[in-house]
Length: 222
Length: 393
Image (cartoon, rainbow over all chains, first blue to last red; front, side, top):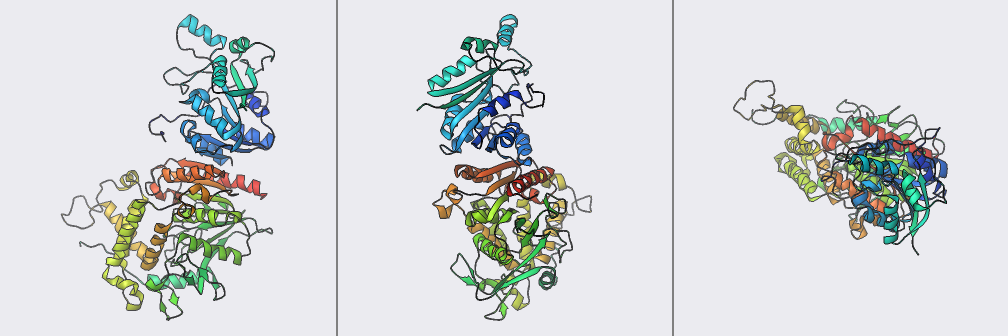
């Protein structure tokens, strides 16, 4: 456990896009990828919003890991099965094939070893769902190009020195990692700044430029 | 005066008389002995218990509370000896997190205790004298076996929940391991699956304090008309320090003097903290039996849930249908968070449904007994979720 050597991460407070009924659009996209009744582990589950959606709309058997005490206590008080833990260290304690889906929602970029985390996810679960902010989005590229500073956007408002996000990647980078570790990409969705899905039949470079967030459904290559 | 003023009263007699009157008692005759881990059968024996709330028609809303080392069945009712409120009255009662308007709450005095259940101060029917050290050594699992017999007697098949802190938490874990199908939800708080060397060491100091008291008389003090209250008080004083954190002790007492402005240059209780500990010691001996203290500390020392599963804790909970909520406190150094994490890792590895929260507090091990709003919110939320899953409305 390296809790002591790292600053306690706080609940993500970044701006998120919500639909008319107040649900986070990216979470709804993730939820759509999950089969009803599945066994799900949500890594970095925050205040349990996704687990609650999945339990209520898909009837899943959901579990969560969350690093912030505040988040864990909120989840447990909601009746969710959530433990305090760290994606970087605690996934190793789970047995193989324990879940149908392991979800990492907006957390990959905050882990110390994204590759190891991804490998554990597909060891523990048959499928993995990963969502992350795309650092290749045109606004971010333009800010870096014109201002020469680490970009801050409404979606990623923190300064470089106090952000939890230590491993940003672009959609292309993530696809490369999936290919490198032999992961099958079953589905991918890119969301624009307003939470709308980008058209499916566009090339990867278009997604990488106009997708503000990406959601991937992954499985082990057989 | 150099020695603490640790008076003994007629505590033991009052204790027995009062608890018999104010508790329910179930007696198990020769036909249903308690088969102990030591190989001995305890018979006859009795369990004193209290209940709160009402059992529903399905008999599905029962919560068993397991008390800690020096606790008893008076979880939410006035203690017959001390006249103080129940030890978990902040947690259990109408509208409280363990809501007696929804749940039927049972709390029994553990075997080897001294509040009405059979223990070393009970009369051995074979001799007509108190058992003393001839009472068999009991384990946490023996306590749980006896509780299961009580639950059978009450006609309850499955407990909605079993909850407890410290030694009570050990019993909760033992319940989940011994009777997984009978425990829908388990709440082990501030506990561990085994006693550490440090835990055993502290207990040994306490036991030696009792046994070093010349009035202990090899446990035959009742027969000989003596009382090892000094030894027991010292044991309690030492133990009490382990229940608090350094920060909490300092916040409460600092280096302040007790009723004086200057040191007396003697061994009187100059400091507030000394006075406080002496009070803890002397009030404890009013309500507790020295031999029971030996037996119960021993039971905790022997506890090691993984031992009977080849040292693999996860095997203790393999395929467990129980939903768990494990809680620890940041400043608890007697049962630190690492012990609770070991439970959580084992439950995860076993595929069990587990929640785990660590609560930030400087109140130490005793935090589970105190006013901790976050603990209340977590237990209320966990039980609400479990009640929905159980179909309790």
